[in-house]
Image (tube, rainbow, N blue to C red):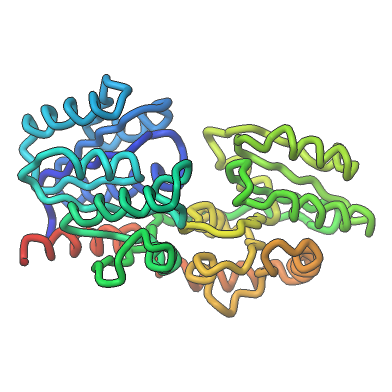
Length: 356
């Protein structure tokens, strides 16, 4: 179904996996002829210009508190002639679920995390299931996310979810070729949080430094562990190799000036940075977690055992010798994650609502 009028509600439009994916979805929906509005609740409007350039109408709620936002959203939705309301991320899902509305609602679960991570598990499960039960269509961005929802009790086993992986607009780009045996350039783009397991990366780089490998490593992202990670960098005497860049708005130059991308996460909802790396033909060295296997395939040769710096070292050594092989393997996976396919599958979820 090509819904003519769609309203997406999302917590922020700061740069992140869910937000970047929404930008791609809006692009495809507008290309198909839909009118798209995005309502966001808070945060820095980092993607404001990107959404505006597509023709998306952007509305930021003025209220900061949840109850006030619910009232404001209720009044706002009354003024919009909509066919679908599509909510992304927990606060937005819960807000939409509690607002009286005549228009069908779709929710997308983007993360393999508790719905209310700062609260008790029982409360998180209740809030999660409230949002699910009050929606008419439900999307999980990976089999890994769906598995988490069921195993954690944040969704009932009987609840119907459609798995719609992220999509990407792949372009014909290639990184600048150069001999990687002089000084290999590693890149990681991720939040500085426990989930991303930076210590494993730093310990592996320390081992490679002791082996005499010449390399540089750039880490782009911000988060609560920044001071701890900088202290570990100093302890491992990696200061001359490692640069902590903070949050980077335009990451294209980082992808273009790197030889390998490393993602050491203990878990992921999807891992949008993997598609971005594939777009740049940047070989990926990645922890073997379920969602990354969904993206790269079970036979991908750039995996290492999660939370194991020795395994990461071994995989890096292999990748140094087999860079082109990893690129070839990634190329075969791109067709599975086109933006057009993703948008069509989201449209199928919309259609199912109106057919029931």
